[in-house]
Image 1: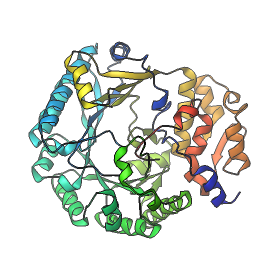
Image 2 (image 1 turned 60 degrees about the vertical axis):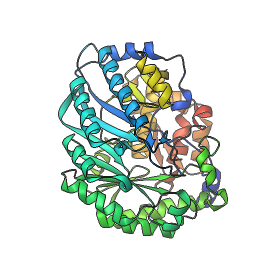
Image 3 (image 1 turned 90 degrees about the vertical axis):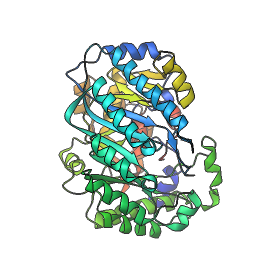
Image 4 (image 1 turned 180 degrees about the horizontal axis):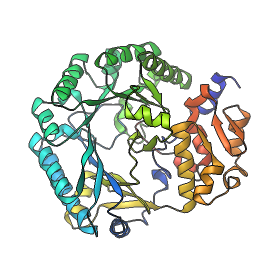
Amino acid sequence: MLKTTLVEKYGETRLPRYTSYPTAPAFSSAIGAGTHGGWLAELDSCDPVSLYLHIPFCRSMCWYCGCHTTITKQDGPILDYLDALHQEIDLVASKLKQPLSVQNVHFGGGTPTIMRPDEFVDLMKHLRNAFGLRSGAEIAVEIDPRTLASKMVGALAEGGVCRASLGVQSFDPVVQAVINRSQTFEQTEAAVQQLRQAGIGSINFDLIYGLPHQTAASCIDTVQTAVRLRPDRFAVFGYAHIPAFKKHQRLIDEATLPNAEERNAQAEATAEALVEAGYVRVGLDHFALPGDELSLASARGDLRRNFQGYTTDTCETLIGLGASAIGKLPAGYVQNEVAPGAYAQRITSGSLATVKGYHLTGQDRFRAAIIERLMCDFAVDLNRLGASFGYEAELILNGNDRLRALESDGVVTIRGGLITVRKDLRFMIRAVATAFDAYIGASARTHSKAA
């Protein structure tokens, strides 16, 4: 089947990014604070864990944004939220029967650097006191270069941050104007220079394609401008237009959005420009310098995928802190109250803020492993993987109409239990992953910042 026809057939469907399985629409309110507390108490101090802290505030709204964030010009709501976050850290620590060994910490948003420098330093000290951060733990923070102050850079360094992820999205001024995000190259360059001078040497850039008035040519121009700063990694996401759920996206004229074929052309043009600039393509949408650990993990075949995308984080436990934060424990997933006010009320009442979650079954774990390997390697050996989980490949293959349709269209080949995605059709990997998603009816309705 022609590539164009496949784009038309599969490209219009909004599919999960599969940073987890099952995805959030499968979560249930049957999993609450009590269950979460019990799962925390079962954690083994010998197993390393990761922490994710969500800071859901920004100074202005980018109209493409799909994140859980609130716009505030005042510091009061941020201070109140940070008070609740400190209390949640203590609540979680109180549920543990033994200290944890934290290997990774990630601050996401919103704009985590919206807090004052002293507040960030204090928060890091609190984390270290409540949990056992390993020596050399990777601490990463998402940054809006437009609002990054020099004092905050110093606080990040003091707090132990070693990786910074900067939102760039697009350097095209026409695109910037219609997404309400004006950001010059000089602003981005200044932020990168300050971070590197402070010893924060690992730099990531986020780019987006599929934005209004965006073209393949403008995507290439953005890459050529961005690589002048030589970040270690790029994450390239597709814009998800969901105005029914994100009302600010109604300010974007749908007539200016590219169709599925144009989106694919933009994604591939971006990828080709990054590879030409010396970056290694990692999975579906990440790119890294050849010596970066992400590239090396991909080459070794032990690349992982979690809520931050492709990663070298091998921790099986992620503790989510803050409003809307999702955690993953050995027993299953948990998610906090989304609205900052409601989240704070639960925490200040002395309860964990968990409002829903999911208890993993053995088959869920098997399917999750299949999807992760496909998303990371574009191939999976069902027989070998099934043996490690105690399942036969036939459980997945028999009656799998989605998979057979993909095989018929030439997207995948199936030889025994080995499934391989055709190299020039790897952009369709999420469509392939749906063939192993037992909850696809719900999962296909998931709403994320990147479709």
